[in-house]
Length: 435
Image (cartoon, rainbow, N blue to C red):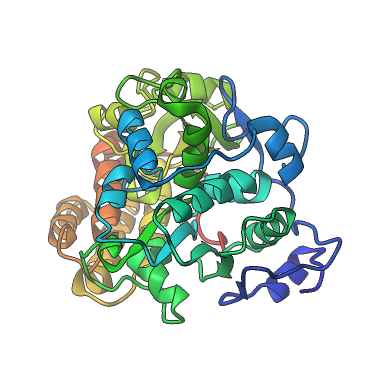
């Protein structure tokens, strides 16, 4: 593989479908093709330790910070997981111990899901490009524990691919690790869609509810494997010396929108939203979007605890660990409509709720933006029609996102029905261009 020195070269060097098998040696001088993702912490960093001294933590520095990777087996790993209540850091928040126990026997494959298709999220790419060895530590340890024949790290981002390739070259025990570049569409990160993409098929959900662990595949997202590496070294008691009793440890949050300091932030689980907004330099806000574009619109209440229980108590879902501030200076209903149309465009077009329901829902929001009164009842009707009826969970998440926004923005909707809110549409919520 030739050295990658710029964004265009990166795109040509590692197209979707590219596989870096175990043992591949990259050309000397290979560098990351893009600027590092801004990453910082509230409290002492664990996952992001070392970024105060280097833009990317290589294996020598990584070992100096964290120490050698401890040995583990399946029983030991399950004991740690049971004692720490570690849940997956992807959108579903599934307990990792349950995934491990759901394997019928030795795993055929461990898959690290780095296809970070949520356009508002950067946390997995921050780990892969800046501290890749924590992710590899977790994947290699799990691979050993479940006796997997193969470890695959799937990414859609050129910089992540380049950084991982370097990381594999920097260590000697990664002989079973292969890195594959996959498509980065929004539904492509769903576990069945990802496995189809890895097999060379179109990266869309298969419409099955059967867990992939039933087929001998242990799959989880990037941050989960990095957290496992921290847990292996710290043990359950030291792992739980931050966070909350029920949700110990730290997590990564991508903060963006109307903030002066966007980026990826490591926080103790349960950190109040107000502390994060203050640290990020948030502008006066009329709403926050928590959980990404399958998450929810919520009022910018500073007391909301940023963990699964805290966001659920506020009426939302922590989801993909995204916090987007919707400033008081933008048209929030217009922001909602933009993302509703984007979500409709991300449909796999393989079932009625996606193919017909989501475009209709987006059209309803646009009609409200333009001041059409009957559209509100139509929007809630279309949302009910798609919820729980799709071939995958994309319609459910899109409906939740849109209806939570409509419920929160009643005053905004009333203003538009009277002629408009008077605020410009500043496009504070990111969309597209995430590949």
